[in-house]
Length: 321
Image (tube, rainbow, N blue to C red; front, side, top):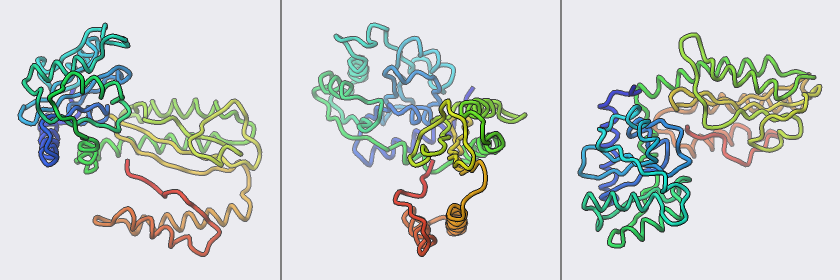
C-alpha cells in the first residue's frame, strides 16, 4: 500500500541522517505528522495522541511509536518492519501520573542511547512542553537539542512522483473552483455552496477521488472578506457582493491551492481597476519565476508591478506548499 517506491523512502531517510550529522545529532524524534508520513508513509489520523518516529543515525530503520491501537495503521501504511513498530498501552493516554514520553525515554534507553544527543522538533504543534519535560526527566544524561525543520527543508524539493500527486490535486481543484463559482449568486445560502464544494472535493475526477485537505474551504462574503481565513455561515449572498474563495485540493497529502474573487453582480469601477492591477501583477510575477530566483526577488517584482496604482498589500503575496 506504499505510495512511493521503498527506495524513495530510504533516500529520504538517508538525507535526514546527513542533515542530522551536520547538526551533531545522534537521534531525531519526529512528531510532525507530515514529516512522519514523508519518511515512512504513515497515514493514520491519530495525531491527537502522542506519536512519532525515533530516527537513529546508525540504524537502517526508524522506530514508529504511538498508541497501541494505532500500531496496525503503521503496519499497513509504512515500509517499516514489525519490530520497529512499537505501541504503548492506553494507560499512557491523558494520564496525570505517566506520559507517553516516559515510554519514548525507555525505548531510547533500551537501544543504549541514553547519553546521546537527541534532536526534537521544538516548534512543532505536537511536541508539547510536557513532552520536553518528560524527555529531560527520562534521559538525564542525554543532551536535548533543537531538530526543528530538518525534514521540512528536505521536503521542499519534490520528486517526480510527488509532482504527479500535486498535478492530480490540481485537476480536482479545477472542478472544485468551477463548482463554487457557478453556484455563487444572490439569494444562495453560503452553506449550500460549501456542501457542494466538499462533495466535489471528495468526488474528484472519474479517474481518482480526492482526500481531505489541510484547511477548510475559505469562502467568506461581504464584510467578512476584509479578513483572512473565515468560511461559510447560514446567510445568503446579496446582490453586488464580493465573495472570497481560497480553496485547496489534496491527493495523498499533496496539495494544490487556488484563490479567486467572485462578485454577485457588476463590479464597481474601483474594483474593476483593482482586478486589472492584480492580474497584471500576477502575470508579471509568473513570467519572472524561474530556478534560482529567491522568494524576496519575487516579492520585490510584485511590489514594483503595483507601484503607482491604488492597490495596497502589506502582507506577503504567496508561499510554498
